[in-house]
Image (tube, rainbow, N blue to C red; front, top):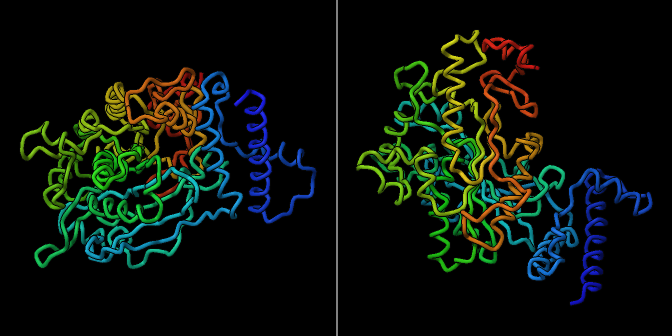
Length: 478
């Protein structure tokens, strides 16, 4: 194929992409286009980020160029055939023996994207329970986290699950799967409900059964499966990503590239700021919760990690920096340096009374410990913000580290892994994937999201927040 033909092909596809995106945008607004095509596309290009093409592929690398053309064509196929739906539809598992805590069938929400070879499976978070008392309290307070009986029939995808290109620049056209968290076991359990057990804990079996069903819904022809999760779901990715890769290989689909995206699930097993008895999920030390929980859930951990520890010490594998070196699948870790959930379980939460000097130092040291654990994580995004969870928030594109947003970093990571299972493949020049803030206090990154009290939901003024921490706000501002 000569350079003139390649150029014409590229221009033709870009013309098609522009007109298609313009129509999609107008259809979502419920309006009909009435201005000249060029004017509409120019405006739409400002609001909608188009499918990215690396034009260096024209310079002798024909294989890479054609792969990009193929990916663009796949992305445009749903647009040409039908108006995209933003809804994910509920499917209860056909295998009724794989259940939520209360014995009701587990399930998943799916939005198919015909023609796309990319699949994104998201694991919901939501803490855990670790004995009969805490599980009964959880069931009465948040029944949807233990039962499927009242789940809605549809969900709207947001953040990385959104089908809107302006909200989800690089994954909007993927097949989206949301697995509700109803096992309360950090996605690790393999125990059915019995006469002796009041609750089932089947988190890891739910993931496996969903993957098995998705093979019949198009995953069998997939190229990339990104297993993502937030909070407890993020830890669930660490525990299950290699198991999913092995499952697909054993079922005859070794060509599907399995990767993991861990959001706010990189917890530390550090000493609490203020020790309290382990009576509830919010104040119990993380190590004690997992010690008790793994026995109650019959929790499973990755075999390579389990072999690193003595019998009875498998709980160590629930902590990211300990399990990460044993994971074979490529992983991208997203972690707030001042994670609200970590501070809650450490009894060092910041939005209450004025912060004492030793508490401020504890919080700053915690961020330093997190930075240290991320040093050898090749793909990471760690802003110095006080928050928890990010990837399914609609504003997930706004936070930056060193001028790079999270979607941009994930796209760089995708490109670095293109056509390869190799997690250690060198990053592309000018396309960073290891992004960790170096400034030392909460919200020193100006792109941090609004601070909200996690208990009340009320917005917290940043200046007041820093004063309570004992910082000289004018000096910090300078």
